[in-house]
Image (cartoon, rainbow, N blue to C red):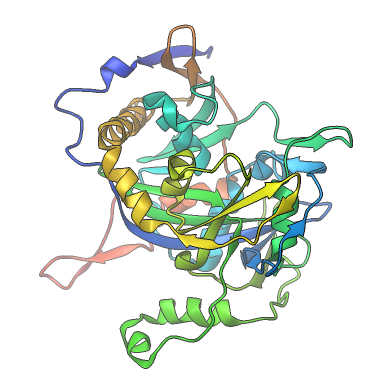
Length: 395
């Protein structure tokens, strides 16, 4: 079967009665997390841990970034199935997780690209051409990043800022051999159940345990996150396991860190203040509550502070409702299109036409075969309303 165009979407299509009245993120839940481990074979540690924020109390000089930089680490380390670590981590954390009510599984980057189509002002360099590969299983659309390059090498004579070196200087790695921490959350947006994977720069450690009243209010899972985040000595409790048909090695290591502790780190020269609107889209998609805006003069950084920017991001969401409602409609339409296709779909932004072009393309499956069985697992049951009888939920 050759490829064929199945739909084209322009901005003018994203209007009318189908646009939802409100498009906000609700019901945010942490599902799982993992760290990539430096190893000859693709290896992740679950739940892993972000680096701990530990900035010095005095100004410091930081070297410029150099060497290997990941653009899309999941694809760079596991090109056979960049999305497999997301699913493996979820099922290690919760073996009974029911994937079937989920409408979209995606990386944060894909939602940011779709938002840039609706509102080019949210992208740093404006709207650029991009590609997203999409596959449907039952009622779930899986969005996979498609990048020209998955990593970069910064040469000794190149200058691309201080961001990575600053992160190293101001955080403590909690997982031996870690090369990056990824988190997986779920939420409701525009009538859709969405799972989002994103990289996290760090977290703020708890300075004290919860009060007795807070302990009473917290669920057991919340308490686990709090107590785990207080642990200072993560240890590797598993040399790693693999699943038949997969090359990915999964270790159990680290502690779950609550979403409320996570942060994003941004660096900038002192004479160019970083405004919230420049980073709001990225932070909104992942619902990261904290931000560090680190300013420097020729690599000498002032003492940075951690800001809770939840109110600013909420206001940004309110101010951007016109665009976010269109984003919600766009995501729904994409899901509806791909559900009616027999093959996988490539979504591509064509600058010349200024449209999103969806093309049906034969492609190898995105996940190992055993993971697709999660959509057919008859062990998931619900209690029939008012009857007290268990019945299977049909996919």
